[in-house]
Amino acid sequence: MGSGIFVTGTDTGVGKTFLACRIARIFRDAGYRVGVMKPAESGCAEIDGKLVPQDAVHLRDWSGCQVPLEKICPYILREPLAPSIAADRQGARIDIDHLLKIFNEISAAHDLMIVEGAGGLMVPLLPSYTYADFAKLLKIPLIVVAANRLGTINHLLLTLEHASCKALTTLGYVLNDLVAEPSLAAETNRETLSTLTSAVCLGELSFHDGDWTAELHTRFVEEFNVVAVEAALRNFS
Image (cartoon, helix red, strand yellow):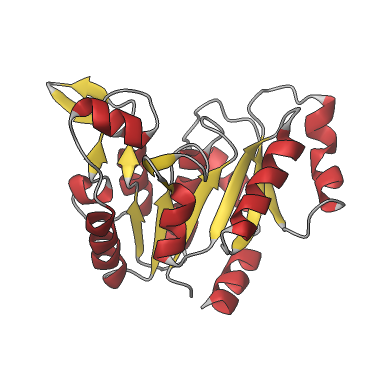
């Protein structure tokens, strides 16, 4: 197996956490020790006087990772902004060396790491340092999740091209239906993309509306090409 998977998206709100959690559960159920990390989470709500990184909580719970939440998500930020901006406004500074140290620590105790970014590859962790730079530092391949709607072709192809420019390996992409009634664009995106990129479509996520039930997970397992991911990870390592 490769050391990990970096889950990124074509935009914010396209289903990165949902996908990352599902992938983590699949590998957990297959017997892997799965470690997870959300380097920075912004837009965190305050509960009982404490900021709670809900995405990181989901990652921890679905993966079964026993690492303390403050290591799964080292930078917990209040405002819903790019991490570099949210951190600056909060009086914090994100330390890339610190993130790398924690990643290596968690990775050493697990068979596979799932790392979830924020927004897309060009979102800055520091003013001149993006998630693409961080994924390259970690030396792990990407899975890209894209909202399956009008505009996805352009957004996904740009993301894949930028990944290639950064010398990042992409295992494939997942199309995520964000509405119950798919548009004509959603119905044709997969076929169209197959003629425009050699990247593999690993599956399509049916509309879920934040549904985290076991029944939906079973349906996702049927839709997601985990065999292709395992094979690609072995080749990557």
